[in-house]
Length: 240
Image (cartoon, rainbow, N blue to C red; front, side, top):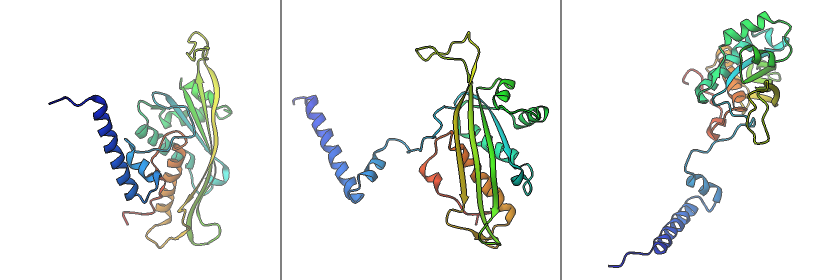
């Protein structure tokens, strides 16, 4: 018996691939986008708009809620910062998020701070993320008595790093320099489908907790990838 030649095996493999692809095309109704989804060797993800990788970095998270948002919700800024930090620790390998209590102790000891980089220097961090919560409410502005989350957050990130040479290598004998690496706004609405009555199994307190988690999650997506399925909001409360 003759040993099959390599190019013969290649032709058979190609034919098998074509047949399998044709079957997928029939299954998908001839939509190539659906076929490509099935042919991907890994779960597809949506990349973050901030291109600086947080892996292995020491990160400080600062948050400030404008006066109007703090009237009804005390410590809103701390809660958002805590949730974002928790998500970073869960999703980013080898990240070191500076403890929130240490961060707030520094803030209280420096009431006149204006530049987030000051905190990065104080904690010898690589990146500082500053979240300014401009609005946060859980009552529908157009439908009194209904629950609807609306928030707007200004997201900024600054990196403290050594300058790099022409080859992109850090020059370690030169002092670190600061750079604004990200600046964007995030508007969050929950539920997207419209407001819900408080009697629908969700108290105002439970709704607020849920909405705060969604706000923090969508903020984290500016820095870490997420799957398309995560874009679908979960509107269940208390297992209902």
